[in-house]
Image 1 (cartoon, rainbow, N blue to C red):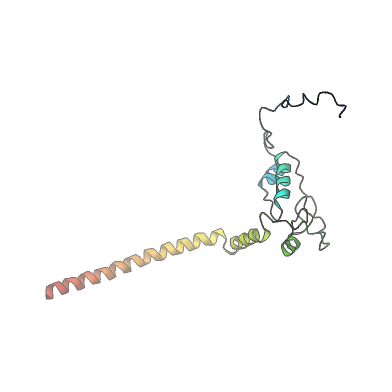
Image 2: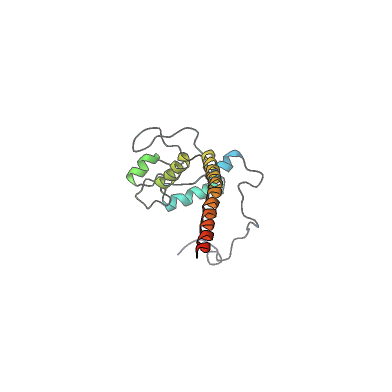
Length: 163
């Protein structure tokens, strides 16, 4: 038996409740808060991802000022806060970069790196130039197409006259 008083009456709800949810950028976000809100937590398991999102949501996330040492390769290559492994080691060993467990990685590192490579290969300026060049070549082709159709019409007229 317990010696605590009031255990049976402890079934009521919470006495004081917040009317509105906490916002980490309520009074104008600082650059650190903006950066933390925009950060994508990749290479971690679902539990670690939830922990990191909670830290960002309630202003507990503190970013790194200097790179940390990786526990696998022992180099100062860890750039993300709360991670214990660098990206190459986590990708190679298929481990969570935060806890180091062999859990299923939610957002893998290689997908993000692949997307960055595609963007690097084709800068925005070149895309516009390619679109412009394609547009100009289409305009140049149109008069030639009309000439081809014009020849066909003249051929059709001559065939009609022959019959």
